[in-house]
Structure formats: C-alpha cells, structure tokens
Image (cartoon, rainbow, N blue to C red; front, top):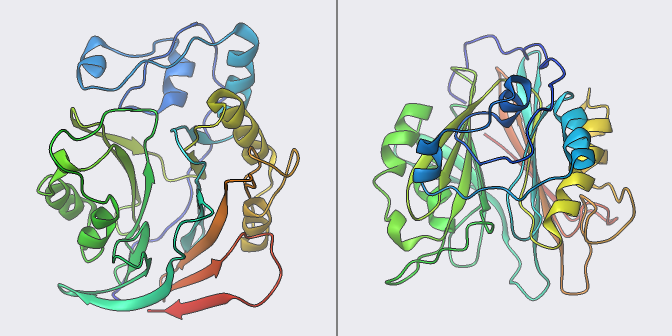
Length: 313
C-alpha cells in the first residue's frame, strides 16, 4: 500500500460533560462539546437545514451525558446501521454493521478496483454502489442514510451508493471535500459520510440534508455512529449505552461489540434482528503503517459459519 508515514495514536478522552439545557439543535460541531459548555447551537446551524432534536427529559439528558463522557457517540435516523472507529498505536480499525430489509439483494464480496491513482477495496451492491471503502493510502469512507431528515429530491433520485464509489480513489480529506461538492447532490436523499484520513489523523463527518452540505470534525479517538428509525430515542439510548460500557482494547472486543445482542436480541441490539429487517453484513477494515485489510461477513455478525472474505491491499 502507499506509505502511511505519520505516527498514529489516540488522543485523551473528553472530560465528563455538564448537562444544563433541555433542548438540543443538531449542529456541525461535536455534540459532546455542547454538553460541556452548556451552549447548544447558533441560529446559523438551523439555517443550514439541520432539524432540531426532540425535547429530552432531565433523566434522558443525564443518561446521555454519562454516555458522552466515555466517548463520542453520534446519532442519525433510519434502519439501524452502526459504525465504530477505534484508533490504535499504529493505525486503526473501522467496523460497520449494515442493517437492511430482509428482501434486499445481497451485496457482493469486496474486490480490489483501480481508481485514479489508487487501488481501492470495497463490497458492492449488484447495481455497483457501495457503503464502505478503503484504499492504499489508508483513507476510508463509510456512509449511512440520514433518515431523520425526511426531505426527498424533487426531480429524480440517484442511489446514495454512488457517493462512496465515486470518492473511493481519493488520497486525502481535502480531495474528498472538493470532489463531494461536485457530485449531483440534489438528486441524492440525505446521508452522512464518515471520512477517516490517517495521514493527517482526521475524522470528518459530512452531512447532506438536501438543503446544504455541512461538515463536522471529530477527534482522533474511539467513536460510534448510528442510524435509527424504529423508536429512535430508545434505540439511540440502548446502543449508545452498550457502546459506552464496552471495553475496546482489541479487535476481538470490537467484533464482540458488533455481534452483541445486549440488552436483548431484537430491534435495538447492535446486531439487529426484526421480522422485516436485520443486520445483513459486517465489514471490518484494519489500517496500519504496513497494510490495509478488509474482512467482510455476509449475514449477521452473530451467525456461525465461514462465510467470511478477507482482501488485502
């Protein structure tokens, strides 16, 4: 793979935040910072098309505050995909549970593709799109639908799977930013794109709401993102609580988290099971100074069997 020369090491965790507000507005800055400051969002954030969060009770805010003190947890809406980012001394892990309707066509196993000046690696939809990728510079992308934003394109809709597919060959976070703005965004439903750029130790989240594209910079530390739609408040609390309580010092522990059925097997567990939908695949990326590797498991992470593909760059 291309050289990843910068030393990679996680930063110290956030201090425990203080709860002082009753209403939150989504903003393009880390949420944990707003808990700590007691200041939530400016009017300019609202004008960027990001909708206000629901009102929380004092008990719910206290519960969230305790969670945010452990790591950065970021919420979204829709089918409940889960993304985890775990830095280590020399590199990082990126893991993703993909939750979909049971009647959706199965994805294709990861393959190496030559894109621009890079060799990229990703699983694919039968139609060609993808939801996660890595390339030989170590740059990784992961996309989740943003179902809390209910807006739809007015004139034709394209698959959000093209976003990662079109950007997978880029070499830096800056190249991603430039190329993302050139995509036909007005034809794409709302989404959130996570960009991991190890050469600069940058974790960036791009949010497309149909009314605007906003950016959030996250610290180089353990983080989790969720998208949820079924009883959203409960789902977010359940998954955030499980992630915050998990010890994640190894790849084995990260895998255990992504196949977890806590607090019980069902619609709110990280490995999700519903009559109409389930976790249909697990993708795991390992990036070090020497190599990039992707493991892909078709089916729920909790299932037994050897239906696992590993591809190295």
